[in-house]
Image (cartoon, rainbow, N blue to C red):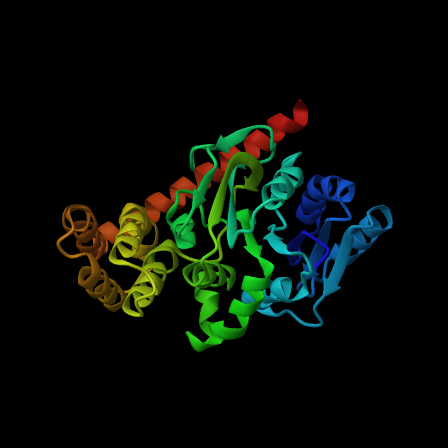
Length: 344
């Protein structure tokens, strides 16, 4: 395998954002084109994605383009990234995120002398201007080697797909066997298959993992989400790791780490999504969460009382009203900011 790194960009109907992404990564990759390829995996976009990519291909020989004949879904397109890559390592770069100058060189320098199962990139978040970080306190900017590869998955900030760099051989082998763990259709719950691949491959290898502390990745703040916090980020999320624990793939310490993450997210998720659930749905949520977290202080004294309160009709209506007012005010601030920026 001559290529050292495949940078795979799954995309669907986000041509303008993809163009910004390509502007950041292509000049870096072209300088190392003997070692690096950039592959755009188009999930049957109907905008001008194909035109933009093909124009870039005239300028950059490192760029390749693959278009699915039909939309394969989130998991399907991520799977295509793994199947299509030919580098020793595969980096997944979301189409709205940015590789800061020097990112490709840093990755190549890291993989030159030692083999890893998985590499995670540190990052910061931005809104419109990548030079103005909105949030950057995700993790310390220190490099760390994890002898037990899965431990990197328990490290702060690891989880954003654009920060994932997979050992391609391990990823391809894991992809072949992963259907034995659970039905393919269930991966949509976790917004794709990449986290599953990374989790299983780091649990089943003796190769170490690495966290690259330098912030060479900028991730765009999402304005809209195609999932809800209460079910996806809390219940479905923890249910998956509980499943891994029952299968004895992770330890009780690993599961406890995931429990802490969920309990930290849970109060906001209850306030955000709870008012829109029917009473029988809230009862189901209470039963599930109580089964997992009853006896933990944050659940007993914060989360559980919130769940009980949100079932009261008056409080539920008030919460929905407050949220509508908040959204309206946020949209007004956003429009005002855009006007101010246009005047400058």
